[in-house]
Structure formats: structure tokens, C-alpha cells
Image (cartoon, rainbow, N blue to C red; front, side, top):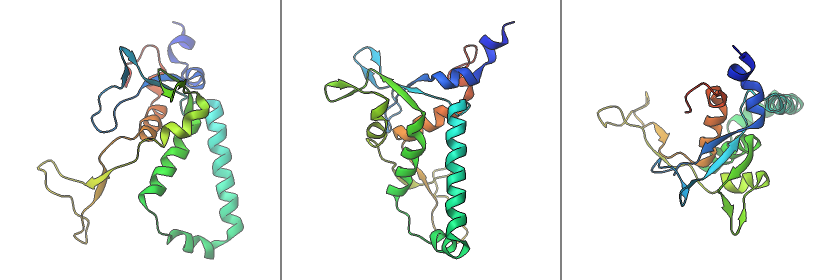
Length: 174
């Protein structure tokens, strides 16, 4: 058996794999006529992505160390809004985008340089989390828990990048 052909997720992750874009609210595949609209996504197992993630983590650790503990506590208390969550999702997903298929920005085909534009098109939508019976899920203090109710493009790319099976020729796509 050729293990390189059947199990080399690292090489396939580096090249990128087409991901079918789905409507963030309905989950239906987005099509351009009869052609699927897709993003070419590099996987998290990619050697270049691992190097980028390592460098980003080291830079964050160094910045935190330079600020000192007193400022860390103040930073933890900063107010965060949904825009911050959205920007964090986009920032995390953008480096994984290698290109696009059947996606246009105006009258020109989208390229890898358009990743941030593409990811910023859709925004997270939050709603009260419900249990299997449709009742709100509450925190210990009685306040409702919230969850994302749609699947913006940044979330789709991030989740797809993390599934190594998406890069195996012998595995089901998911």
C-alpha cells in the first residue's frame, strides 16, 4: 500500500483542499449557476501553517511578558463586543485561504489576497442556547447562555482547516 498517497495529510494540507461554501444561515451550498463556489483551504497540519501559528504564539507570549502581570489583569477586564469575536475569527481563518473557485469580487475572480474581504462579508449571529426540548439553557446565576446561530464564512474555513480527513483521498469529505 502506498502510504504517501493514502495518508500524507501534511502534504495535502499544504496544497489546500476545495471547501464548498455554504449559506451561513440556511446551510445550503452556494453555487454560481451549476458550478460550486469554493474556497481552497490549507489545513492546520500544513508545515507552513504550523510555523505561522508558532510564530504568532511566541509573539503573543513575548508581548504579554513585556507588559507585565499588572497589565494582563487589566487586559482580561477589557470590554469585548461581537465585532471582536468576528475579527478574531477572520484573523484566524485568513492565513488558511489559498484561493477561490467560482467566487468573484465585483467583476474579477477572487484571489488569495481577497481572503480578508471574503471573510468579512458575513458576521456572527448570536441567540439564546436551547436544550433538546427548546428551553433556554441557563448559567448558574440564571442568565441565559448564548451561542452562534449561523455559520459565517470565517467559521466555515476555520472548521474545515482543522479536519485532517478533508485532505485524505480515501476519507469521506466533511
